[in-house]
Length: 132
Image 1 (cartoon, one colour):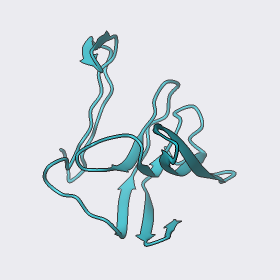
Image 2 (cartoon, rainbow, N blue to C red):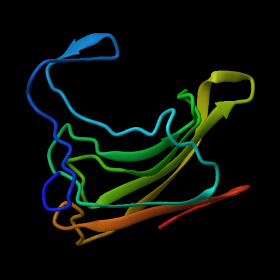
Image 3 (cartoon, helix red, strand yellow):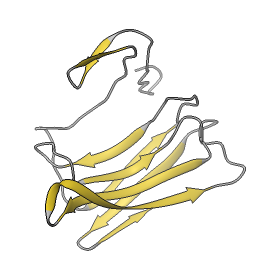
Image 4 (tube, rainbow, N blue to C red):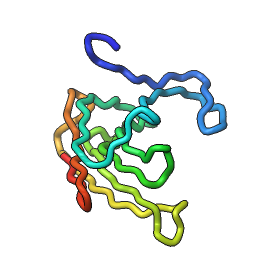
């Protein structure tokens, strides 16, 4: 945290993730066992990093965590910082370990989201999610 901005960095150093040693480390923040909410407005103001292999995201998972379901308020691929992905993933009715999803791609030509801060939000109501 510096000047009111939280920075989460990926670094080239070994770290364990998902039971395996990886060449890179990263970070995450979670509200697991601290805050769980259904419905409402969820918002982030962020500047996304640029670079192949980076995958910044702001998601909502169930508590306790499981997958699916998941609502992606935003996901970026570091090599395509002019495109943001908004998604909703839910369990298939006949196979809860697999998922179905809907993804809304927003292509914004001429805007590089890594160049400055932007605000992204999802408004979740019963039967509807709106992204902005």
